[in-house]
Image 1 (cartoon, rainbow over the protein chains, first blue to last red):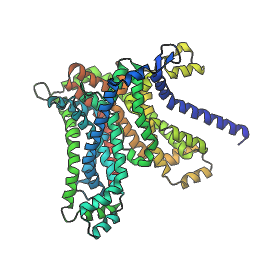
Image 2: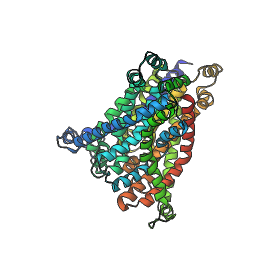
Image 3: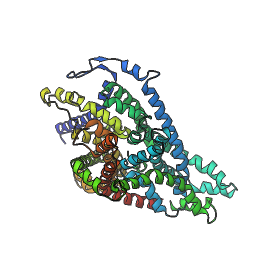
Image 4: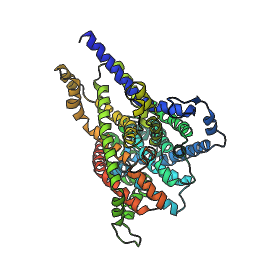
Length: 271
Length: 291
């Protein structure tokens, strides 16, 4: 390759990468500008004035955002607790034990990924409305957990399957009971995977919109719903600040995710 | 893997093992059954039930009469997005696998995955500002002289939805495909390169056929996910023609019309059915063969 051709290739490559960087970060940067814009009218390219007035409003001690953030985190924690409580035994059985009807059971845990969730939310909302669960934290947690659970089962079963069976056998041979063996050998070895599934379920719940939109109205306002309402009400600053709050855990997790999980487990995740 | 499973049996002694295992799975199955499968069946029942409890197709007639255009619009948007996601994912994953400049590969690997876990509702807000007439995209196009200020236009219509979907879902499919490509044996690739095949030929003829399954799984999951996203079309393009999810929310919020909403949901399920069937077959087979 001649020097000129190589230079051309390099310039083209840099240009394409710059274009791609703009496609990824441009939208995020635009959001950042809105979060700090005091005034921004057409046709000016940049905000006319920057400031923190809207931040003060969002973070006011009695502001809606703080309340929604609290609601969101509380719902996410309850969802994690509930999901893991049922997913850990199920994951253990799927990962380590011989199950009858294994194929059918796997199918049941894959179904929520493969079917559009909208019909489910719509009908759960109707049923919950009749039995008084609509608009309650319990109702929203149940909806989030029925989805988060599936992720948790898959990640937990992968975590249990990767525990070395000979260690358990050694413990059993020197007289440990099945429960002691599970508690002191299997569970600690699977802990990193279970931690990952907890984080995943937490994020899923924190970011969930459609289910909460149908089941949570009118009393449960999570952060995504608050953001949506602010945006539809034309308040781009409040919406953008709330969106930034939601971005922090998402991007933080994206940056560390490969330490926790392999790509084939990530295949289970899709909202 | 098989030996691990054998060892697992040893920890639950006797013939009770199978029932013990079922008992461990039961609570999770019940939750999925009650909060997922039952509502899904209710949707199917509600779509065919007349006010007097009898069987009717009237809800479907009404749905098609009112929303046939939106069904086509939805299918068009989701199909186009899926196709674009495939192109973007293959291009990025292909460069990550075959790229010759280590620095460019590293930069690209760091760049592409930022939208991976950003929720759809945030993506909607981000694109709502970015693609608006006064958004950064238009200012960038004007600033670089690509368009005149007068011809700046809002992209908040079907294009906005497609861009939002591709921006959000392409990193996910890329991650899967790049993972599968990285696991391939390098000999064939090296051999083809040594014989002088250009990189795009190596990508299309040698690498791509070997990761076809992973690519299709990623695309099917994205297709199904996009079909039931409500926030993005609501925020970017709420007016007719719009996506079916918006119509469902409208039927419920404005008329409490669950019958037509369920009929629309069932039609969406029909759109997803082919993809879902393919995915479930593939995933169950893989899960059974590896554990």
